[in-house]
Length: 158
Image 1 (spheres, rainbow, N blue to C red):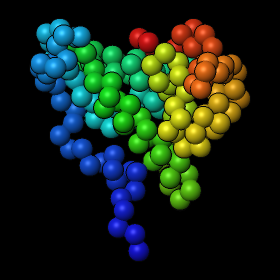
Image 2: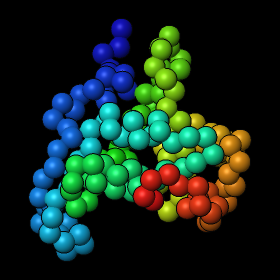
Image 3: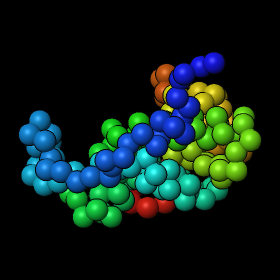
């Protein structure tokens, strides 16, 4: 029997989030004075679940929406990206079991700049396949993949 936590259990293990704190000194040179909102996994999942077919979101945009909700200066995009990764894996894990949890369309959430996320379940190929099935065009630039004209299909702020 495995003692490893499932992805859904990992998402539930952040009881002190969300929170809003002063922007740390190391980040002030780039972001200035103010506050940073660190989202809860549930907030990130809710934002990802709200992206309708044919539309897209970015980790930056979700972070900005969460910051606005908490009246913070900025949102923590690092934490948002980590939770987006966890939500993607929790969704796929639930699909293999007998879960009644609605499927979160995680493939519609891109990295900053419209880049596909190689760390989502199935890697670039799976995300590209799902996005192209919804009418998006994916282009390769060097070793990375992006949704062409992704900004035209964004929901929210970015």
